[in-house]
Length: 316
Image (tube, rainbow, N blue to C red; front, side):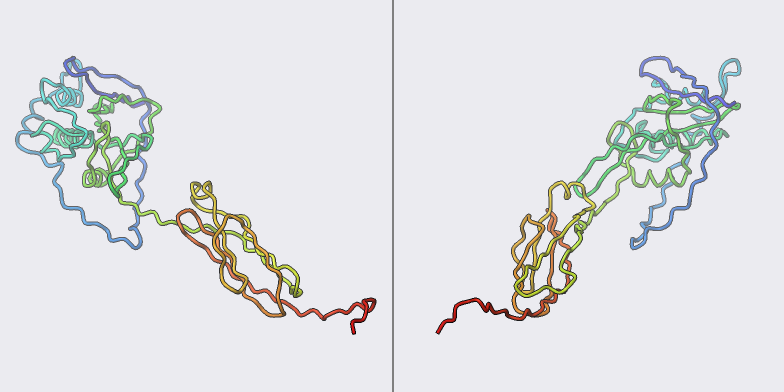
């Protein structure tokens, strides 16, 4: 059984450790994500975001010494990183920085602090990794860009114990869904990150949503129609991928071979068949955004022999 500890503190109060006993989790194998078809793969500028500076190395050497009577080296380094009287790191949800920049400026978001701590812990010879805490998606929009917030913290192992280091003071619970991040995945979030909502690193993606036209079943006479009889056209079972478009309703238009009538809300139309002929009939369905689907059919109109009424009075 491996114990996991969540380390955080309140400003101005001696750092405390909230101990959460849990079974060690087996890291999930990360799949290789295929390139998006039809899209250019963006080049991410090289960022030495986990590089250590001499000042950082001095900090690690001074504060990673274990108190053998009480704590491990991981605990000692985490305590120093979280203590406002030692590192004095200010949580700034809008700043995504490299580890060196974070150490120099003493500020940053959850991804920034996690990078800083992972870099220092590894320099101390400790096993430190990034992990993502799966939280309900929180979306925001800036112009044509959609932003989704994510939360990242660090985990470090020492003496058969795991310590979760979270600058946002969020306590890890047994109900949390945790996913270990590779350095490559964390770097990708750094390259895209510009967090602005409660401590989560934010990835931005421009999404263009194309309107999809509604569909329906086009009904027209499948057999020949006698001249003088009605030709009935209709569009039934309308569907649309958008529930908003479906709720708004659709408009319909029909063509009996002489051109379309105006769009209207009626899903059916009828015309008395004229002289025998073969007519191409059409129907259209349109959603509120103007997307249209058109259907075509062929109707055969047959001639009907005239009839005479022998009982009718002769007209001279």
